[in-house]
Length: 256
Image (cartoon, one colour):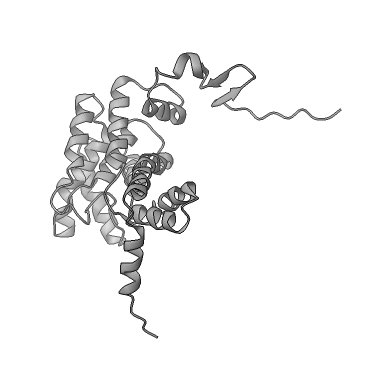
């Protein structure tokens, strides 16, 4: 007798007449009722978020959707220039650039904060914990994720807004508190003042929502997918890819 195969999942399934998602009837219970941000949170966390959690989560998605002509946007536009028949390829090209310098900082910061809190145990003095963490990072020649920005040299405008929203919703938790403490104490160690960047505060806010830190980069990519799709739609309406390519090509200098 052939062995019966089983592939358990709590995400979704379907039959000839219905589609089930997260234990709900997709058509009858979710469509037109649940927002996409709420659904994305639910899919990963395995529980339906509260309205306050949805507000913070969707604020993160909006904060990370676009930041102009970043390398991810340029990669998407140039790939679309090269292969306009492959929208998915252009979108994927942009998402593949989400790493330690762009987008990936969201996860890096969340992990840094979570690891620091785990090592510290019960925290009563966030500034002391932050000072120790920044000092150790400096001694080990590691960057402190969430500090600094190539454009916003004094303050990233997203940071205070997200902290305010989390506070209003009662979700200003230990990761955000520690992140703010890093902002206060790091000049003592680094000898200069750097802004707390938007990607970092997003990582702190997502970690305070209880989302697993190893998944945080995925949320950054989810948000940026919308921005990249906007860039590709604009590329169709008002092409810039050829100009970008020709500018680089004309100014290339061959140095054997």
